Image (tube, rainbow, N blue to C red; front, side, top):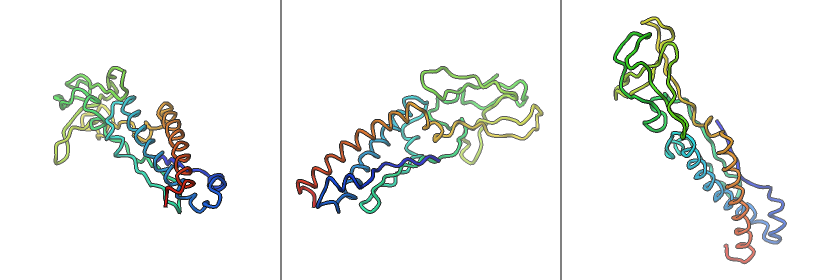
Length: 203
């Protein structure tokens, strides 16, 4: 789980507001909420740009706790578990998506499956030993990628997991873009909100 917080010390804001310093929490909360909205959009867009996932996949693991006047800090929490590689991101994350036709773990059909997690890169052959294979499971007969724990034909099965999205969101390029865009927006909106209060445009 990753927890990101956006806010600022109230002391400088109170100083600038002067006699209206009681509005400091309101001002910071408004700016923080606008910044966290910007940050969420950046994370969705950048993650989908770099990785073979959809923006809605990223949105599903993001939870935002908005700032209030009494608690002028906005939180964004990324929390998710490892998904099976067959259901990770876009359908192109795994190919082919047909089930294995041979039960022989040393000579499956197809010979191997290929995965794609990062955009701009070709697919990667999954040639582990024993080789992973696709089967349909559950009431809805969804495709999942499995691997036996050994080459024995009756060896226990385990799922082949994709990277957890919170791990992906730690990507340096994503974090750098997030920090820059939210900082710019926060500073911009803070100036605007302070100015509005001082002008008496906010009740």
